[in-house]
Length: 298
Ligand SMILES: Nc1nc2c(ncn2[C@@H]2O[C@H](COP(=O)(O)OP(=O)(O)OP(=O)(O)O)[C@@H](O)[C@H]2O)c(=O)[nH]1
Ligand SMILES: [Mg+2]
Ligand SMILES: [Zn+2]
Image (cartoon, rainbow, N blue to C red):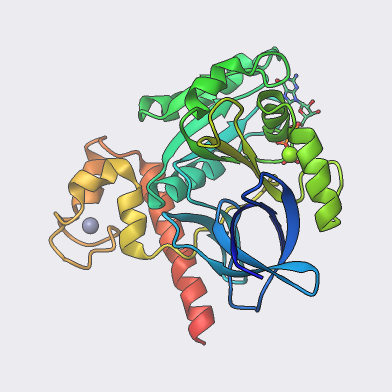
């Protein structure tokens, strides 16, 4: 049978669901061990013994994934935006937000924060905690996915967005409110992938209605940690937007921006131009990467 070009709309280990050219959704298995597939990928599928098999993946514009020294998890490909969903009733981990913003920058994606559950009384306190992000120029959108998700829509139209967040923040609620058939699609996918539990277990892609397939939202399972061990030190430093003007200005070309003399970044921290916790995060991420590379080369 001839090859079909399809879009991956859900992925769970080696099983995927694909949207076929005729608009239907079908499950497929990924051929071989070496082919790495993410939601959002364009793939070639063929039918073998009655089952669909993904045999190739088209070149992607980017790929967002997380990794630590032990494993890596592909999240989504061909994105234009990463949106972190946060809410006041779940303890918000600021460092996770920082990490998502780094992942977005490294993939050349816009990063925004969706501050959800604006209907809760504790929302004002959450907004206060997000102020430093807004000060850095990151868009923070207030919404209530359950009651009025409209404020988010303008930021999602025209974009291919990955929603990330801790569990319980309201990512799936937002998708369900913006995409009327999302619930049905998710159930279909869960059945196909034999997962199916209450919280999200598979990463799924949903086309935003009225955008002709051009805008989509990717719902992903909530996470507690988000490792970025795969980012090499040069990419990593560039992903800290406010550090870019200082890079290449240290006395030593291989400066680690730590205890070296005449370090432009350390000087910028001392001058108040860079927040100390941001430089500390750069160091932490760099150490994680080194640890992971040492493990794989050992
Ligand atoms: N009060 C209030 N509750 C909300 C709102 N949005 C979502 N919730 C509730 O928050 C809970 C978690 O919502 P989900 O959409 O499942 O959260 P999630 O981020 O997809 O969680 P995981 O799939 O586990 O990562 C549910 O009980 C929702 O009803 C909102 O705007 N206001
Ligand atoms: Mg969910
Ligand atoms: Zn330096």
